[in-house]
Amino acid sequence: MVDMSDAEERGIRDYVNGQSQEDEVALVQKVGARRILGRSHDLYDVHCKESRWWVITDPTNLYSQKDFPEIEQALIFHLGLGLFLAERSRAELNETEEEHVSPPWRRFRQALEAMDSASESEDFQSVGIKCRDALIALARLHAGSDWLGEIVDAPKAADFKGWANIFAERLTSESRVRSYVKTLADKTWDLAVWLQHYSNATPNDADLVLNSTSHLISTFGTLIHRRTAGEPERCPRCESYRLEEDIVTDMEKGGFFESTVCAMCDWRSESEFVSFAEHFKDADIEGYLSGPTTGISDRLGRESKD
Image 1: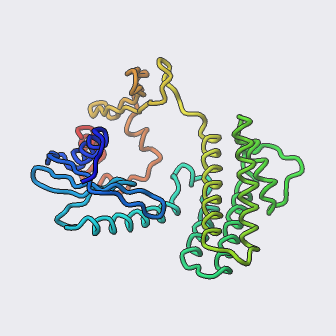
Image 2: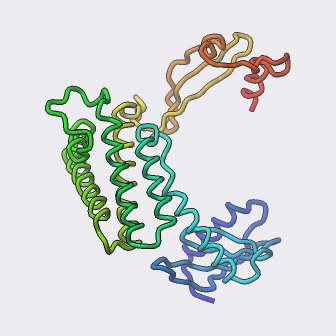
Image 3: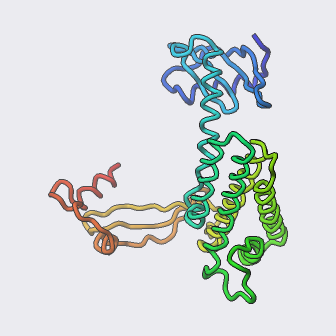
């Protein structure tokens, strides 16, 4: 067994209790640690009243000892799962961000696909070409956006750096953020072009460019969303951002009351009544009225009870 602090033991105990709420932890034992590819993974043997688990960290997960009798089996599965999730996450983007950068993100996914099958220097160079194309697509996508306003001496369509500087000026108000975005755009473009022409390109070089390109596209997606959606609302009483929509259905009146509630101080806005007819007037609800037991009123009535 390996020594562990009370806080460490309590953290593992709380984690397993949270994951297996019907079976309480009786004993936590640390059985070792492994450092693999620069990441440390702590290993625990956790005894519950009716079950027994391996717990492995970074990221923390638990595995039934019925499925994995040996800790090494669980560790191998844990490492493989972590790699799979990390690789899949590179192709995913927050929905609010992707809404504003969908075409360039599609091209970035093509760069990821090229990386999956790359084996030689010229293959890694092609990753740089696709990342460069994704950045140009980003510039072309928003070259005519309303939030840009009037532009004097607009850059050429393929001048990503020129457009990126203009985007940074329009999308940021803080000087430090603006400087960061401009530098990030400038260096990311330079990296993509460098990889495109680097005849000794390696997998690490391609990964560096992929990560930089992903971060830049995501950053612009975030900034554009903030610019178009505006700053998040705050509670007028306590200035918290934790405002939630509260809806109470009133079947007798044929609609619902809608208000905003603060999760921090319980402030509530005035309720506004919205009729079902008004709410659904622009919606395609064909099939929603397929019968007396599946109509709008019945469905919303069940939803309100839930």
